[in-house]
Image (tube, rainbow, N blue to C red):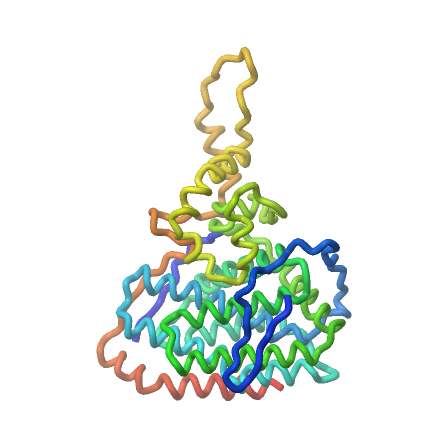
Length: 360
């Protein structure tokens, strides 16, 4: 068995066509965010729609898979073990019985919106259903990444149908992680199931589901270094509505894609470096020197205190290969334990599936 100890750094959008029986959902078209009258979300606790549960869990789970995949590659884990982890987690997250339990449970008259604690507990179980483990502190950091990236995606969205587009892009992206026929069928089935549920909900309920997703994420305000480095987030945790960089439109048009992979693209690296410098300077209140004034010596202690106060709880990535994910310490287990793990994997996964399928 592999033991993951996530020693994590805080790294701090449409209609669809989908038909069953061999037809796939089409989300390849560009995402249009230039809605003339963007929806203003004003939602009270009584208006929160439990039908949002499945979208919250699926989207956060896909973001979780992005991070797990990045760390498996960064630690150069053997491909067979990486495939096992990604496939096991995907199978439990998108198990039809689990998805059906979320959908059917949300239709009851006494249905309730899942709390953040409940979602975090379930996703922790799902993340550790295979041959890896995450300690409590590291799961907290992983949770920050999942919630804040999903929150940013909804922040830049402008219409309720963008929620479905984000969800489908998430599913398409995890389908590319060590794809095989079984996983492809599972993801297509999930997309068709969610599309049927969405269409059956009606326009008013769709808006309510979308609004609930946004409202559910409002309490999260963690600074994420990937978003800060891209210039999408300020040092107070808030998001910028517009960014004067060419790549910003590309990220908005493809929200839901794997941002860790996207941020590694060479043209993105060259394009955002000046913006990062400008932003850091702005956060440190470094202003241009007034004309006619001479340079004054810097008080080293004062500068250090200011720097620590500004960036105290933001841990930036190390090295040029950093992607914005947390740093992982990997401890391989002994061969006998590993063999035992393989024998128990299917039982463990089935136990989780059976447990969560009884939620409805």
